[in-house]
Length: 304
Image (cartoon, rainbow, N blue to C red; front, side, top):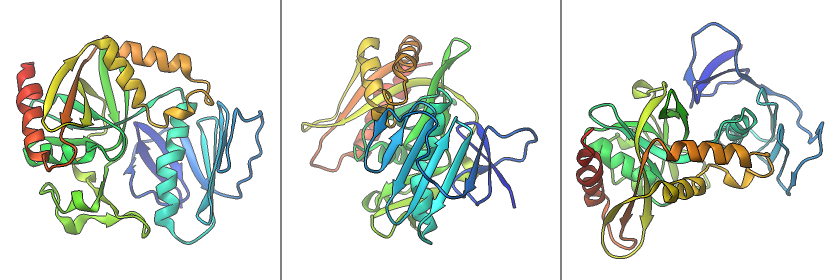
């Protein structure tokens, strides 16, 4: 059986179910395919990067997770998966987190490490930060207050028709166990542990997923430090640097030969969108008051 899905507004065919993606029922040729097969690092061109578990150049990407699976992504058109176990949750977890990013880079598209919500007027607000800083939790707290969850962890951000827009990844929120039990946006029973080895859970929101590109009203960089909540608007040049720091898999940029694409993408975005920093205390619970401050001082104060 051949399945067809959509992710990052790209269509793919797959010989295996990919439950995190949304089903695509349109006609037409797929942008890439996912198949099972034997994977060897047989490169047409010499890899620019050679590491124990990863090798890649601009158009070829090899990745292996010992005792889980091997993966090969080529030309932005094909992903081959060789399972090394029967743990499909783990096999697909590494596929989602690495192979799709490789597909995007090979197609000259840059993914960013962001979560995001749509406000009550339909404007999109993105939260950028490294892992464990609170992107997912902040988005969940805004969902509790009536905002629509747009994406978790990754999105494409670009400029189209003279406006900054973003495209969501796929409708699964991933959060640590303590976050799952300290939110009211979803029923805890909906959460599924991603891997037995980690206390991180996924919650699907396919029914509410917005797959079309949305205009970005602002990008908010989250930080943890100090003892108070502090929100400040930042200049475009500063925002451009911070956004560059939050490119998803940013250590791949040079090996993928994307420095020029990175510069063009960041500079165009910085000219079309506003940036803020939002700081919360590191060592005390503050997410509810943090969400309220973001709403009052940024989203509702925006006035657009």
